[in-house]
Length: 391
Length: 242
Image (cartoon, rainbow over all chains, first blue to last red; front, side, top):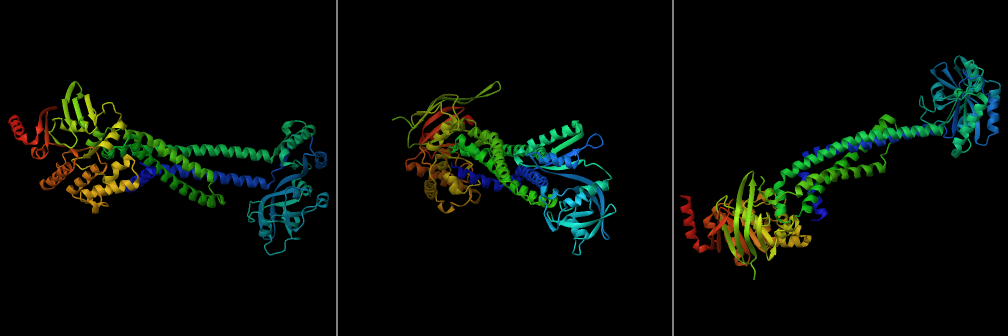
């Protein structure tokens, strides 16, 4: 008996008892859709995090010096000198964070302000759409000027002209000299919610005399690790004790993050896999019941000359078909839920990967055949007279 | 020429705990091609066991069974299935049509397992249905037919594979007397066309319509002869009953 005929028969048998078939499939449907949803959402989340990091520059290296513990600090000039004499490191800029309240006559917002040098804009590939970025002269003269993100431009100065306007940072008036290009819908807390001032002005706001953190960029994306270790060597000579400074490259951070995401995904998929196992056992259970119910049919078929392999194939294909249909429904449900959840929770467009769909389908076929095998074997080995006598 | 069916010293013994039940207690029987034989006996006499063994649905505990000259005693499950498929056509008391298949599919089922092509299956199944006068019901399901029609469909199924032997197990048992007579007429017609028919029944009047009668009591053959001599046997039987 051909495969196509078996398949057709299986479909009509499944269709004949719709409710039961659906309930049998439910375990597979839930399992497969759970796997698809988790894999897709984790993928989306990872992508989003990666994008966020990439936005900060994948070649950037963050240096933080614990200034209270360290006896010696690294002056900006010393850092520039080091960068100029090092082929691996391209550029450096102080990068200070000031907790600040930014205020205009109509708006008021608490957040952070970054103190940077004139090179920072290029290092982070910031595009200025109006005005200019912070300049060397601003740094030297500790000018009260600032460059703001699209969010600030929109919320503080919604009536048009921005350049030359004034806003107060922790009470000190600053003049806006530049506006950055909009990147992420000018939303609060996004990459558009930024205020840059000369680091010298930031030191004044912080009432601090030293620069404790720098942003550096590696010259070559492939030699970030070498650049990092050369920076570490430099700091070791300068500061002394390794406990007093911290060097984190974005690449390292991304690697750690993706490793963490991967192991999290593995754990979640394993948990979802348990429901697939339970679904498979459900199929086996129903198939065993079905074999008992259809003992007479099996007897008739055997009396007409069905061999063990014919009966076996009939039941295995039936189990496989139930599981396959369940798998397809699960994939569709999972994909829809993942896309919807991506929109609502992550605000990102998520598409389930082709690989996860193929694997999910393969797994559901394998479950059907695997768990259908035992009941099918039981059916195939029924004694024809016992089966014919069965009511 | 050797007989088509040849049973020699067939024993079928069931063990139930310490008890030993001899369903068949040394049966020897040979049936030639073209014969119409009725195996008659009361329930529990062993006639069904005998039919199961002839039908290759069961194997004897001891003894040899030659079907068409081949000893099938040591055949495997699948080899027996092939013998049933190629050599035997079954007609059951309960028709045993598959309710989810239409008549055409039911009748074609032995051909499906024989590995015939789709076209051949259809052609031969329709020919068999035509022979029993059910060609116009080919697309109907068994539940839409009367008992007599279902039994005729099952006869068509038995004929479809063009078997050497037709085995009919109480074919009229579930039918009223008129349709029962029709079925018997049909079996006689098949016999006159040269088919070998083995009929199992408990009913003397049915058995009397065969050419030859084999009476089984307590697993033994107590009479084997022409149907015309049946009077004597039935008197014997009656004497045993009272």
